[in-house]
Length: 352
Image 1 (tube, rainbow, N blue to C red):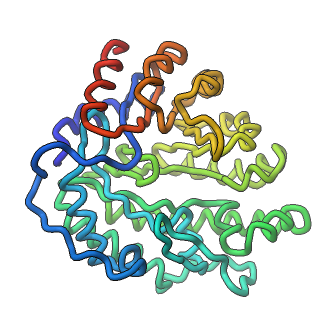
Image 2 (tube, rainbow, N blue to C red):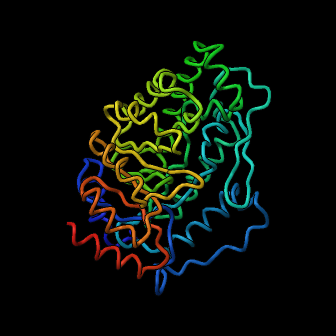
Image 3 (spheres, rainbow, N blue to C red):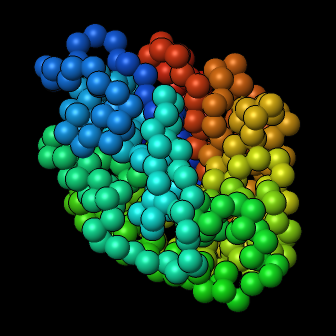
């Protein structure tokens, strides 16, 4: 692989999954100093957003070019970001994707009748398969092809029927909602298994969002719509399906998004086989390295799960370690240069 210290980082990841040690990494990448790993030509600029996001040939060429020029110092993973919008399982089940400058939006399924149907010929599912296969061919083992951000559960139902309808159905038709949620989970596993078969390298894989790696099947889980529901409803409509994912997958990270979702932390920590919790404070809040989140991290660790703290700045790194400790932390830095990576490695080295 183009990452020279890949075996060391794999060891650090395995320790982190088991609530041990420190991972020093970042989400996405910065350019490396010096020459690229390989002389790969950049594709011509994308003609439009449609080609930028949804043309497997162009996008796989673009990712291959960019991956040859990124830094993989510290524990930064060589993982190509193949995401097709946050929650692309919804599109596989019939919602629509719309490319924007900075992301892909998912539009609810027109005329959704409540049936969860996995059509192998769905155009967005075929795009997933084609994009992943093209990327895997061009990677040639130099980097991981990441699993797209499928998402699951209530968030997928919201993308199919609209958030308001999904929330109302929790009250007016809870039994049908539970049946739909189980059907979503069933499709999730079918889709995930096919993706894993394409992207795994000797049984190992990486996941795009938050750049996680592990042997076997690895995924980020979430329920962002949980900010709109009670703790009891979370335990009824979210927790059982998250638990099933954790039981069937090998390594899992829960994406806890926003201060209004913090009330569900107890229920999240009750999921026995969940390995780790990632914290996203939300718009207008201090980011992951701020001292106001130290107690949250300590609570997660005390609950037997590892922690991922995001967008930590260099000046926040040492105080974070001094206050939260040096065990079970995945610290996703806000690096701007390889010089900052080297400085952070020196700081972390004092806590090994």
